[in-house]
Length: 430
Ligand code: UD1
Image (cartoon, rainbow, N blue to C red; front, side):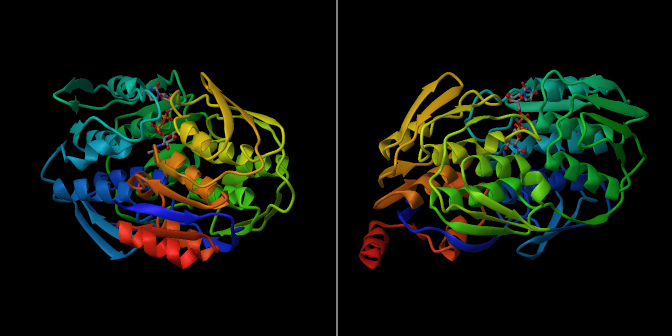
């Protein structure tokens, strides 16, 4: 019964070190199978999703060594299997990156259909369309996506929707295809750019990542590399909003401020002070929060992965705010839990209409998915009284040492496993 026990009401104050980006680390790990030489990766987050992927990679013969908590070396010269059916791999979204990576290198891959957070229909038609355009056959059988190609040939692919996953997968499949591939309407997220930089450091020829047209000239092989994963935009944004909701003063360190611009802009709009330096950002929330409107959009728009966190903040802001979710249709499930803490939010379709309240009150709540789980922890930290947050395995998928980092900022939060631990925590905090 692992859960977080939280006593709210403390403003969070201090500095917090942000780790490597989960959503960049996952495709980078998968892409490491595309060379027979050794790959060294630094700034690897130690979170459940990356560990599940590493385990699945070991199961197909990749030699994985963690040289310390955040450094890993991989060698895929002796891959023994092109079928990835690991029980756990089905639970993570990024399992499908092994399709693009294995198809690109070995022209064959069979991978269990991806899971991930239940935040709406998560189609893979654009991935399939891309693989087929490159000359692969794709079929779905017995819960596996099976792809095979005699030759992969560069192609001109127009994406019908902006998809991070499809852009990344097609990029990997195209890296060693014959000729040139052009991906139009590609995703521009920092982790798309990070993967392109990683592949280029292995000898790939990818241009335009970070714009909506990516050009890939196929190369015959990729070599080993040393690479550091970019800082996690969403972990940083979550701690920035933790400052806002607890009326705190938090500096996020080891970040790329450019990646956080849409988040910074909203924090300024709702009345926080934000100071930027080269690789850190300080957020101070000394004044009452103000209402605003926000719509989630692909990068550089406001990230859908920050939607629950901003909603929690707007629930405590003066006036009426509107949050529109334009990426995933089922991403307001946490609102029921927030309502139990006193929020006044009405959801109509993909829009939440939020009438700010002056405070939340503690409650026993459950994390419905990764980002919403983190957002509910923020709500509990701002709330009057005591809360528990269940189903924290979702939060552990993407946040390393979440409760420890929050403790470092003065939060009264503990990971408890038994009723006895819970009672002990309650006695300790009084
Ligand atoms: C990735 C991130 C996730 C983030 C999301 C949007 C990872 C592991 N996950 O998810 O945290 O919330 O980007 O920034 O990096 N779509 C299709 N057909 C497809 C693919 C996608 O219609 O073939 C649609 C989806 O249903 C969704 C939208 O496109 O509405 C965006 O999805 P996508 O960018 O692919 O998200 P993921 O890569 O799954």
